[in-house]
Image (cartoon, rainbow, N blue to C red; front, side):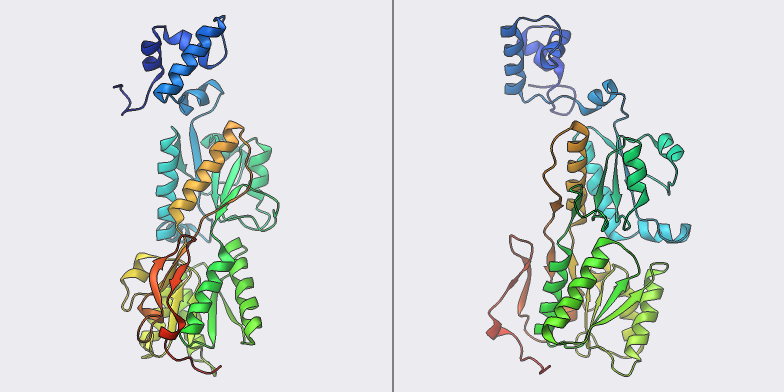
Length: 369
C-alpha cells in the first residue's frame, strides 16, 4: 500500500482499508468513542495487519510534549575544551547514532550547550535526556528527574549502582582483554594513562587494571592525565614515563586522543612501536586506524551505545518497564602497534564482542616476567 510518508502506514491508510473515517480509526485505536465492540476489534485487526504504528510525534503533542530528545556531551574545562570534546570520533558517533535512533521513532535530537539551571532546561523543553558520561552523583540527573524529565545515560553514574537507566560497554572486561593481549605479546611493565575524572569507564578500567596486575604480581603504573588538553597532556605524561628510571614496555592510553600524545613522545625519542614499546588505546578512532603502525584499540561501538540509550529512554517515555541496563559488546582490534612478528590474535571479533584467539602455540615466545 502506498502512502505519503516514505512507506510508513498512516492512519488514513487504515481508514481506507477499513472503509471508515479517520476519526473512527482514531477512536478505535485509542479506545475512545461509542463504537460497537466488533467494529473496534475489526479496525484494530486491520491496523495490525497493515503494520500501522502510531506517530510518536502526534502522541507527544497530545500529551503536551515537544517530540525532542536532548543529547548532552561531557562538560570539561572551558569553551575550547568543549569544542575538542565534540570533535572526538567517539562523541561524533554517539550523536549520529542517537539522531538515527530517535528519528526512526519520530523524535528529533537536540545537541545542547552547557546547561546548569532548570530555567535553561525549560527553554530547551526536551521530553527526555540522553546524558553522556555522567559524573559520580551527577546533580544534573537529580535536577532533571525532579523536573519530571527522564534521563538515560551513556555510561552509568557510579554513585547510582541500582539504576537500570544506562547503556555502556563492559569496561572491566575490555581492559582485561587488552592487558591479556599485551602480556601475551611480551609486555611486563604496562602503564595506564588514566583520565582524571569520576566517569564510570575511567573508574572501572583503573580498578580492573589494578586487579589484573595484582593477580600476576606485576607493579601497577597508573598515571593520571588531565582532560583539559587531551593530546598535550598525554604527551607530557608519556614523556615523564619514558624519561623515568624504569620506563614501561607497554602503554594503554585510555582516552581517544591520548594515543596521539603518546605516539609523538615516542617518535621524538626514537622509540619504535612496537619493537621497543607496545601501545594501545582504550577507544578506537580514525587516528588509531590510520597511524603508522596502526594502533591496537577497543571499539566501544558508540553508535550502538547511543541507539541502546535512546531505546531505553523511549521505553521510559512510554511507561514501559525497563528490566536493566543495556550492555553493548565491544570489539578488540589487534593492530601493528602491539604485534611483534606473526599475530597471535585476529583483528575480528567473536559473537560476544571479544577478539578471537589463535592457538597459543602460534604466539611468539614470552619474555620472562
